[in-house]
Amino acid sequence: MSFATGDAVRVSARAHAGHHRTPGYLKGRRGTIERVHAGFTNPETRAYGDDGTPARRLYLVSFDQPEVWPAYQGSPRDRLLADVFEHWLEADA
Amino acid sequence: MNHDHGHDHPHEPVTTAGEPPAAARVRALEELLVEKGVLGREEIRARIDWLVSRTPADGARLVARAWVDEAFKARLLDDARAAALELDLDPGPSPVVVALENTEAVHHMVVCTLCSCYPKALLGPPPDWYKSLPYRSRAVSDPRGVLREFGLDLGADIELLVVDSTADIRYLVVPRRPAGTERLDEEALARLVTRDSMIGVAQPAPAD
Image 1: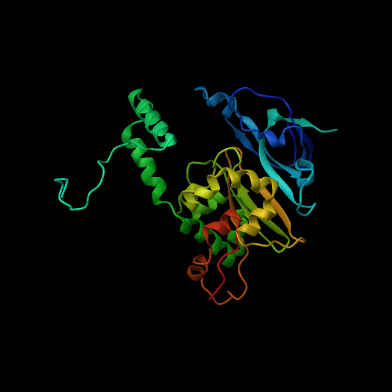
Image 2 (image 1 turned 135 degrees about the vertical axis):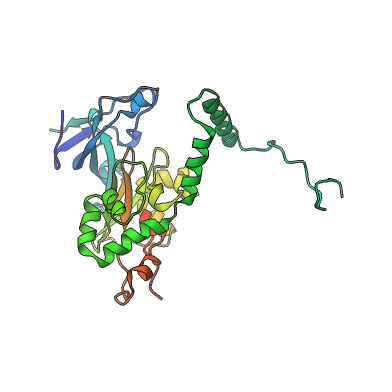
């Protein structure tokens, strides 16, 4: 499914054997869509010689630091932003 | 003199012994790619030449122009790739470059936790610390601590946004224009824009 700026999302917590660009520290974390980027070829298949098509939508997702690191020492307003492909995002009810 | 190649200090023969494992691996990979016809030696050489020809001076030109020209700044924040082309700068192979503006309320810093993604076309080759495991892990989990080690003590009232460039987008920070620079022209301003300030781990150099 596709998302719009401001949507609440959760990064899929699934494991993935092989190359992928979803950092482990963000898996299962809740965030908000900050920016909708263009579609890009899929690094998970491109890494193994495929052309990576069809392109997958990429999003800049914003996470509150205390959501990612419960023991976070900085300001609670600090945020972490990361680019996450659409097939790694789930709607967060 | 114990060698016959024309200079008179002794040394061990030059060999690849003692080469770090990573360097040996890269060399082996390069040999294989060339042997299999995936890449040509000229292509590899051309890419290395391109990379070492890039410097943070290009990124600094973008920032200095943004400091003196509000309309340009708006275009830079909207599409940094197009803004670079407007100044005849090479934005590099990444299809999208995003410029992030630091203000009195918000500070951005950039990291690539998965590898070392970096806007090389506009900043040159990344510094070794940017590729190091300690920076890559601590920039996301303890960014204020990392900034303090770089000499930047960020006030608690400033919102710190750490951007992890995990995919195809390259991020460039537009630092705040230093105080007392009202009389400087664009070229003088560009000299204050350091590489580290465009990664977001430092403020620009102060005006003299």
